[in-house]
Image (tube, rainbow, N blue to C red; front, side, top):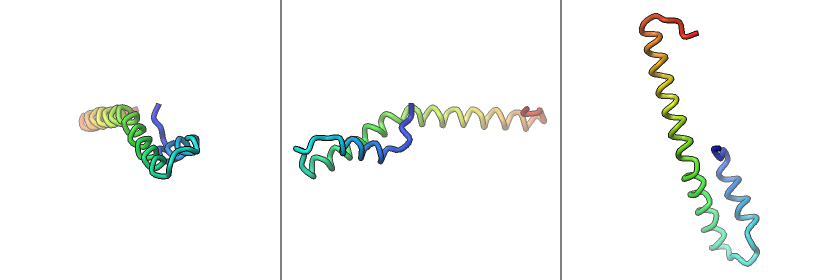
Length: 70
């Protein structure tokens, strides 16, 4: 499942961290969280791009031959 709001999740991760973390540690945790979320989302984004490209190609073929797309 794609994570739709990376910033909010990263902030939630930092908020749930222990109070013993320094500000610098929390900033690092935030940045690391954003990077991990981006890595997690990448396959979903690539798959969606591939599906869009395939759908566009199929639509162009259907319209190019005058076939109904419905």
